[in-house]
Image 1 (cartoon, one colour):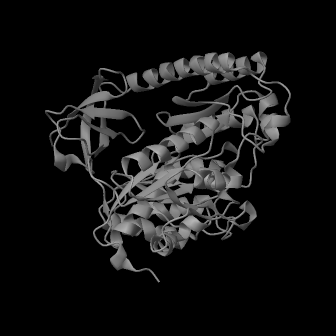
Image 2: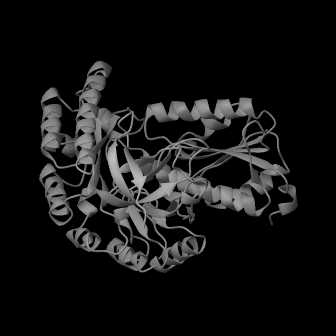
Image 3: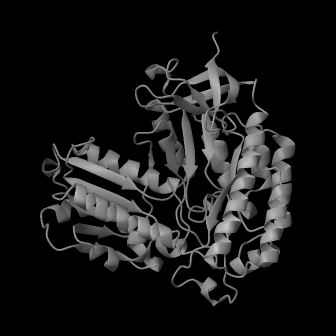
Length: 444
């Protein structure tokens, strides 16, 4: 039983590291605590509760998690500190030993975060750890919220069965599982009633949707497309082998699914893809890109690429670079490989040194910048519909076109009432740092 009176008038600070799924879950935690009377702390205020939702995708991510925990403990010395997320699941004892941490919750337990927090609140003292083993992670914590953002994030799936050789996420998140299509449609309908206009579908391996319920991801997309009031959907990330031609065909003609794809490649070398235990080869990936571009030539396509993994010889990297150079994609999300304890990649003999990793990363980042610039430049002088997002007072407003071109509206033209509004604009030239196109509002 949760004693809500213990939370009335309390303030909480939230800090999220990692993926959009983590941000979605943190927003939901904040919403649940708000229902108990907990306010989000404002700048300069002391928090009674600190919640840190962690990531563990790389060694750097682990380090950032520890830094964040130490920083929030210093900033809010009297707060009750809760740590959850992937790093908490993979290294619970290490996290619990950080001075100031009161509660560590694994992936199974965060579904009942408020209950655990309520129980621990009255027995504050020694750090408490609740974290089950990977095989026992079976709960699904629903999440459809926006926090302080404009777009909603709807969690449609959790966990992963792929066990790529470099990755610890299946150990942190458990096996693939999902709720029903009906429950997700109900959450989208609630977001629409709250005034939401755009929803991003999130998960760990969302194309694997249906393992729990026997349903299909493309049928979820069809059902969500029919929700009145939601004008836009975006799919956060889809494995290429799970991106079916049926789904591409449907999205190309759907009412609300935007021409925007995020597809992990990881390597453009078939040799490296095999070492990674990926479920496709470069030909399949190229075929998917070609199919998308045939149906929707202006689609934005983001691609994840890992550089410097074990086994990536100079020749293998050059294959990746040449393959990506020739692909009609928009942006590369480049990640240097990081050694993760317990992964089978550690048995691969060829090791790439840090200097070569940095050099390869830089080359791909420059290629990405070139491709994105060309994509944006094609849209200069055109008209588009943009969903604007709120901006700090006196700052430029930003938003995105249907195909994810980032736009900027000058402070002199920005209005608070434009937040969460779909507006017709004319796209001008690049802004000062080349990260967006300047726009003017089209007068009806």
